[in-house]
Length: 377
Image (tube, rainbow, N blue to C red; front, side):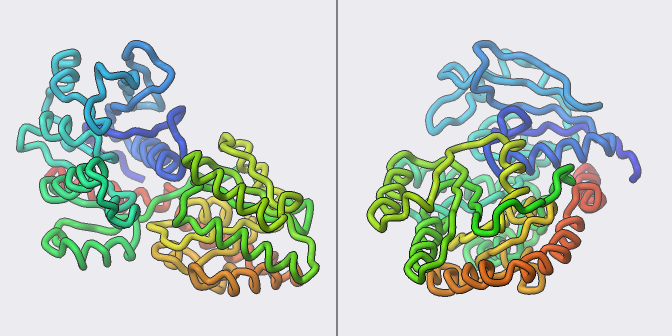
């Protein structure tokens, strides 16, 4: 891979220690991939555990400015206070080759530092209005409008799946000319799947309504009604009210012996769970991408996944057991198939791993570098 000379300002909520999910994992992998390619990167990010701001160095060419999560730096809607940042860190007001923004709370800062002539690349991990189903709450509507203004004002838009591009085409076709689809990558895991129990399945991800966790619990219930033993481990966190709703559902249908909530776990521990599960289940009703599925596939963990949005672009029946998103009966049927045919799961896991390896960051690097070079020019 060739080395390119670029100075990029990256604005993100998640990187390394502040990585809380798929987006954080993706940003971390992306920044290190660009670092290995010789891209000079300055990263601004919040730090939950810091009291004062500070600079650190990562990799070969990554300088990171950590900002304490407090009202001095973060204002209304969690927006970074651009005037404070520019005053306290005048070195940021320089002629960057481009500004790469990953989260809408940096929009005012991106506009201020761009000065109207430094190009802005916006990586969109989800359309908020679509993901949250457009509720009327004023604070959420304000965030939707911030994102949509950023779509208008940035010079290039990165979408992570064709499904997301279809949404853009239907709602903001005027921006298609500056949009490209660039998938997210994964780092090759050292861990490999070694199943321990044939009846223990795993869910990993945020605990949110559209992730299909209720569907998964009800499918588990249908299997128990048939007399089969199945155990479901759920790793992840979400709003307290929704987590409590899920736990009450499990109690109501008498599945406490079979469905277990483990809360948030660090990446290393998540990989240990993936490595010993009978299968990883991704039951999303909507999905912009499917990074958890890719990470499981790369480990060789058998996969059961819905055909939802961008997830359907990563996973097919040739490398996983799939079902119609939101269809509890179909999900229970493929779970029963997995229980009855563990050899089928293992057979599908091999091509799944081969497909996942094509999304390794080094494989995707030339496409990303081409975009950055074009923006510089």
